[in-house]
Length: 302
Ligand code: SF4
Image 1: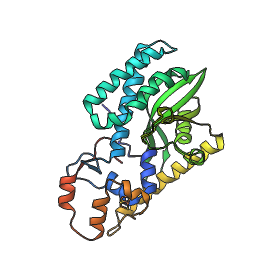
Image 2: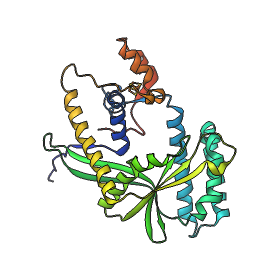
Image 3: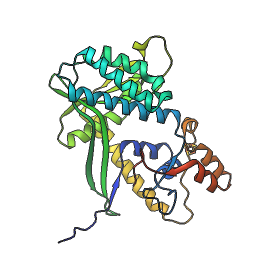
């Protein structure tokens, strides 16, 4: 049987591109440096993930359970009482799996299921839709550039296809951030390139800041970018892919050290102890051995 030649690819998701833009050194630790010679994927993963990352991952899992069960068991329009019942069982599962993180988001999620989601006219089309978009070959290295990703929720609102991204952050984005943040414009561009006629997107915030009024914690922010904004955000992403390819080439040069970008992001960086220890020229072998593992969930390989 004929064997097809192996196509070398570079896969850069939106989140990986953002990681590269925020700090090359962090990107190198999370996506390039191997934990051990026999690790399947490159990159280090902290044994103790930051609270925000852990809570976000858990919240997304609970949202996935909820929307999948609604999609599979309920008729549209969805009955608010049935949505409440499903979310109650999702919260019970969440508590059994991870009490600490569930307890900080359960009030918001129960409110969302009972008082928000069933009244939004969102007919669920897809939950955790995975995709993979080939965007051409790099002329120098020959690598096929691929943009992979996952859309949290795809819904139909009165005949219009809309994508939804769940957020578990302290606060919702301010209006200027919504106008600048490239995530949903990039996703819309990718979906359209794959033939899915997405019209706009919505950030669906379950705010984790402690507040008395749960209605202020559950916030939907629509993003309706025009075609130029979608093209420019997508072009930014393609430019970042090219920069990452160049970065990978530089890593082959002896003595090349990725740049550290110290900023507010350092306060939330899972690698900060490792970063500052290496910066002082101290040995990090034991720290890596005991504090990290080989990359697995959440960080794709190159
Ligand atoms: S602590 Fe700051 S400089 Fe160091 S890897 Fe993290 S983000 Fe980069």
